[in-house]
Image (cartoon, rainbow, N blue to C red; front, side):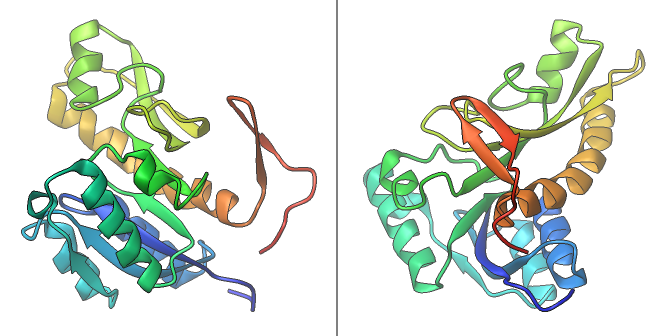
Length: 211
């Protein structure tokens, strides 16, 4: 990577951390202008924590069960990230709906990836939702996070065909391959100021701000 600004980010996860690994490796290899300051999980047994540590990234656990309200947890989470100097937040399988208490601390700076072509099949088990619906095409979406569930402005999408022989595991695996490739590219566009938001639309900026 040429000498350029590396934006301080945190990655939040609750599970195995496959997309976290793709982001960290892209940052380490020069494809993502990010300085991954910390990987945080709300679950101490999340497999992604061990993977992050193996990649040399600091980790932290903040259990939502230790807080009486969502807002109290979100405030503590935002404080933790602030102590690490974080500017942007990437969700990578973080199974919590963030409240305005957190989002207002990082306005338009929280990004998520979802295993469906939003607005279709939001929420959990999106791959099985697609199969149950009889969809012939699904995919993955990178989007800004707002107060809803998978309702923020869309940054980038990739389509994946649904095959006749697919079950949830097979379809999930093919979508995940696309997620791992798409997320670093889309996040880099955000960090480097290549995008602008106009209403619900995310457009290419005429002049990039950095990177």
